Structure formats: C-alpha cells, structure tokens
Image (spheres, rainbow, N blue to C red):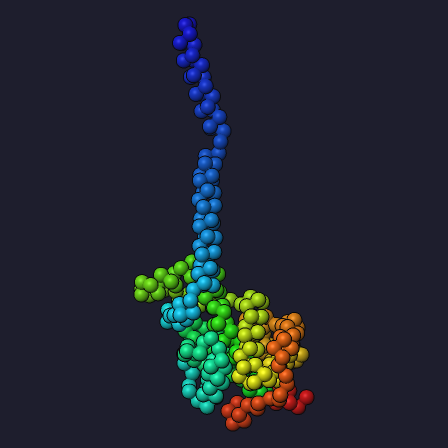
Length: 295
Ligand SMILES: [Zn+2]
C-alpha cells in the first residue's frame, strides 16, 4: 500500500468515525439550537420595542397623547354607552369641568357616564370617558370627597396611565396603533379592553392621588376638607368590604395611601375649611348610607 492509498484509507476511517459521532447527537438538537436563537432574538426585539414604546409615550407631546387617548376610545369597545343626561349626570359633569379648568386637560372634552351599578367604583377609559358608579355616588358624603375621586381619574389621563397600561402588551399596543394609522377595523382590537381593565400600579395610583389633591387645592382655594374621606371611610368600615371589593380590585388601597395624602396636604399648606354639601335632591341615599348615618 503506497502513501496515497494509506491517506485515503485514513480519511475514509475519519469520515466513518464522524458519521458515527453525528448519529450519537439527538436529531432535534440543532433544531432546538436554532429555535433558542430565534427566541433570544425575538426577546431582544420585544424588549427593545417595549423600551421604545414606553419612551415614546413618556416623550410624546400632549397633543399626541390626547389624540391617542381620544382615538383609542373609538376603536376599543368597552361597553360604556353615554348615560342619560339627568340632574345627577349634569351635577357630576359640572364638578368635573370645574376641576378640569385647573388642570392640563382644560381643553379636552371629558364625558362623565353614570352607571347604575351599586359597587363603589370610578374608572377612566380611553376616549375620555369617566364612568362613575351609582354606588359610589351614594357612598360619598360631600362634594369635596367626590371632587377628589374625579380629580384622581383626571390624574390617570394627565400622566398617560391608560396609554402606559395598554403598552404593557407590545402586541396590543402595536395592533392599536396600526389600526389607528390604517383606519382598518380589526376584531383583535376589540379584545384590548381586557388589557385596559388591568390594575394601575401603586406608583400610578399615588401620582393620581397627588394630582387630585393639587386640583382640589386650586379649585377649593386650599381647602383640604374631605380629600381623604373616601379612603378613610373605606379602610375603617368593615361593613363595606364586600361592596368595595370592586374598587379595591382596580384601586389598591392601603393605610400608606391615606397617610401619604395627609403628608401632601401639609406640603401643599392646605387647611380644613369645611365641607361643601352635595345637592340633596340629586343623590338617592340607599340603605347602606342610611345605616352608616344611624351608627
Ligand atoms: Zn386610580
């Protein structure tokens, strides 16, 4: 056997060896490697998109944020029809408008919708619609108390919390933006309402509380009376726990929240100048409210 034949034989042996080695490898191993690489790549793209979207929401001018919040109300179905424009609706709407005058949302039309729901809740929705449940209206004892709650909802708009909440899902946010730009309605957008019912973060709630306090300070000439009533009553009255579950779900409640407000009241140099009563002929007091008065 000459040298070249020897080399050829060695090469053949090497190839056989390689084939044997390859057959030891699981056939899905390379597939898993490729899949892993793609997933890592997609994760990086997703995280980058999230950072870009979050930064855009933070940096966009007010006019863009207002346009987006308003337009999202047109494409997201959240089953909130306008309520009857009765005396109660007009009163709450007027109160909201007064607070709005002192806010960054002065030129934005915001509609109050009174929902015949006995749970204690108020919610801000895209399209600048604030839903106030009848149960909450029957629970509050003064205009000041109600003003704080409305101011809090305005705070969610001011700080663009709705946009931030929607953008917690990059896919949802992207679909919404594409729908707005293309003008094509998609059934996917209708599912986004579930994302919008997510809880705001503690930080966002705290920001909105401070914003509400500022509005109350400006609207009621430094009067802090009634500003913490709602949360104090909720935390103290055990009998309301069941009824307040809905509010607790969407608005995290803690003693810290009330004490934070009290600190802010001191910082703003606000003082107790007395409560403004609610118009008697408008709010119907239900059994729950009467029971509390009897105690
Ligand atoms: Zn809130």
